[in-house]
Amino acid sequence: MPIEVKSLTHVYMPGTPFEAKALNDVSLSIHDGEFIGIIGHTGSGKSTLISHLNGLEHSEPGVVFVNGIDLGEKGSDLIAIRRVVGLVFQYPEYQLFEETVAKDVAFGPNNLGLDAAEIERRVETALKQVGLNPAEVSEKSPFELSGGQKRRVAIAGVLAMQPSTLILDEPAAGLDPAGRREMFDLIRGIHDSGVTVVMVSHSMDDVGRLCDRLFVLNKGEIAYSGTPAEVFLHESKLHAIGLDVPEGAKLARRLRDAGFDMPQDIYRTEDVCAAIIANLRGASDDKC
Image (cartoon, rainbow, N blue to C red; front, side, top):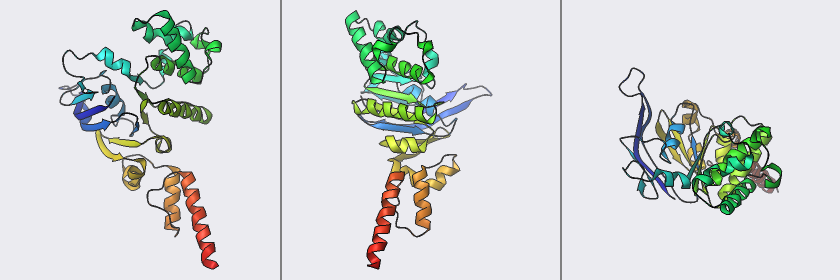
């Protein structure tokens, strides 16, 4: 389910003293099977952008295509689009409302008019996808669960629609380090199952570890795009717009400044460690 955005501009409260341009001439493409990271400081336009990707927002000028369908064209079936492009908002656990976990996860499939057996199958599959045991949690109230479990239930509700693309807005927000690791392991597993993933995040370490390509937003425009290695080469310019680079990239730069032979595009801590070992082995061989 490829997504293409062309020259998208979005203005909040146009024609008023509070007019603000959230997006300015944004163009990008997302291909099937990719893991895309969208990063930027608060107010850079990230959430506004992703709300256009399944038709929740519509703006002119600009156009958004999903699988060749213009989401702004009159007569476009946006309900069908939202079945295949799932959007998980930040803190999705606040949107839980049913009396049991199973009913909450089944809400979307019920609206599709599926038969009871298919709904039950989807609920069970989605709960397993997010690491929850259906036999243990299905009949519990979602409000009895821990914060991390509630978030998993909310994500399961989107997965039960069987989207081909999943968009997540800061999926690890508010979680402790262990919870963050579990959440990103979960998202990696969803991607590995064949789902295209688009993730908004502030964390350069997280997007560097998980994503194939990055789009960096600044003041509603794409400042940089490319692979994580390509984007993180702009360390000083990223700092200038309020962003950081992964700890591995900073360590590599310090070692490079100290005379170590470090590739310019290195940014993962484990890769830096491997490069240090290679340097030390090389120095040892020279002495021999």
